[in-house]
Amino acid sequence: MRVISPQWYLNLLSQPDITAIFITLQLALTSTVLLILLGTPIAWWLARSRGVAKIIIEPIIALPIVLPPTVLGFYLLLAFAPDGIIGQWWLLATGKGLAFTFSALVIGSIIYSMPFYVQPLQVAFENIEQSLLDAAATLGATPLDRFLSVVAPLSSRGFITAICLAFAHTIGEFGIVLMIGGNIPGETRVLSIALFDHVESMEYGQAHVLALGLLAFSFTLLALVYTLNRRWQMRFASQS
Amino acid sequence: MQITAKIHLTRASGFTLAVDLTVKPTGVTALYGPSGSGKSTVLRLLAGLEHTKPSDPILISSDDQIWHDEKQFVPPHLRDIGYVFQQPQLFPHLSVRGNLEYAVKRRRGNQNLTLQQVSGWLGINHLLDARPTSLSGGEAQRVAIARVLLSGARCLLMDEPLGAIDYAARLQILPYIDGLRRVLDIPIVYVSHALDEITYLADEVYMLEKGRVTANGRIFDLASSLTLNSHEGEAVAAVIEGVVDSHDPDYGLSRLTLSSQSIYVSLCNQPPGTKVRLRIPARDVSLTLQAPIQTSILNVLKGVVSEIETASAKPSLLVKIKIDDHYILSRITRKSLTQLELSPGKAVFIQIKTVALLTDPTQQVAPLS
Image (cartoon, rainbow over all chains, first blue to last red; front, side, top):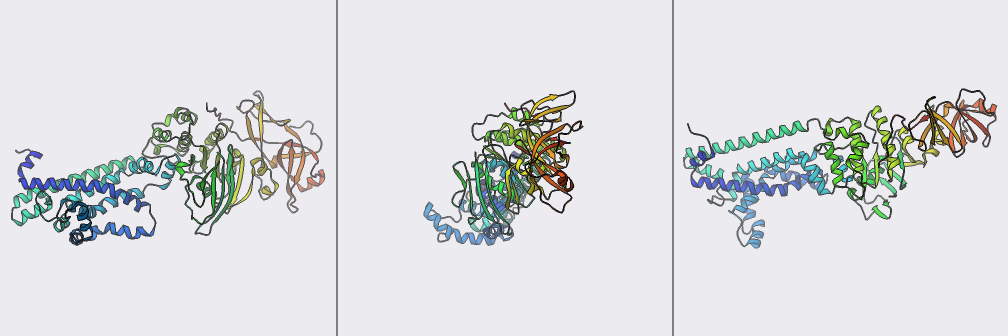
């Protein structure tokens, strides 16, 4: 009987597929780190703001949930083109084109996964009573200190959910990558594209390997999120 | 720290707040009034927790630093204040000890109380490893008070700190707050709608109603004011301060001094020399013109009629009597008033049937050292 191990799984993969997996993980990791830096302040602002700006910003953040990825990809492609709004600026700053690069994928992923990161975190932030932060302030805690010492630990569930969803969602992304990334091996050829290629070429065996791997990964990640959430729920069960 | 505040505030709901107040550098300044009178808003403004419109004329300053005016706003974490909320607001992700250490880590000033001293003093030593969610309301509020004490605050703001806990726990915590008043060298601003808390703790009182100050003065003056008490019923009582003189365990009595005269109360365990507050209900005070002889009433004092309530229709009225430099109230019938021919300046003997010591005799609060 064969033992199911990472080594066994890797042996089933072709070199281009391993490269695709590596690119995918790199993309997901980079996007998630940037999402933590960008999305956390946005989630905090959405949770605390009651202004008019929120009425505009909140649906914009949520758009990728309902919009077909190809629509978003199409507009991003236009924006990333050398004469597009972002592409122009990028060309000036780096001297290189933006479309069909790894950087383009990262920017696209951030936009596409933003709601999956922001929304669970926003809910977690909204559940934190203002009076608890007032108490911290009157004990001498600065705003950043209040965030790190009160908000962050009390939203740990939200952070876990947000990070896992953003990460998993970036890994599973297809439509936008197809539009703005193209299919450049070692640069923009990610897992979902590789899978699509195998299916197109009727290589069902290799498609199975990738599809099953992705399925197992997603299942494990979600199971982990739910287990962690339950543990936290029990720890703070009787909170008022 | 002395705080002065001139507050004029209009809310979208139409509520207006117009309050001028001074918090003296020591003692308890109390804001007393019904709910909706704006007293909590005043406290939150002092703390910097309340948002205001730029058009609201507000001037709050402490010593010579401006905290809040049209140009400047010092945020709460820079005001060196401590705030005790109606709900304890303990951090649920930290243990009781973690909550106290949170304050120690961010301590302002050079106050040197230790966690051990404060938790021993507030009787929470056995709770240090507990999680806040497992505490009773009274325990949680004691932890909240301990946390504020450890934060090195230069002024304590207390917003109905006993409002959310049951009667028995309230009686337990009051002496601790009274203890703070005695041993801390910082001002306390105490907000409450409970008269018993105010008479127990307050030195200076601001009475608020519908966003306005209706009366302001020392608690002893307000408690004996005829105009403030004329609409009150049977519960009218004067509050005076005496000094413990000696104890008589054989009879179960303690003798207190009020200026040159003395008064007996049930045996208390405050050491001689301690200042204690007494509550004397007006209906338990009767007046005679001659010194009563062979009376069962222990407390007979000499005084002078200072003021008489001028309510013509009621069968009973209040008389304010000056005893040395203290004032007490007596409720007598209109018929007695006529028979005794009482008028301001007339010397009378005062018989007091019951005197309640406001300091709970079962609670000995050791001074912080």
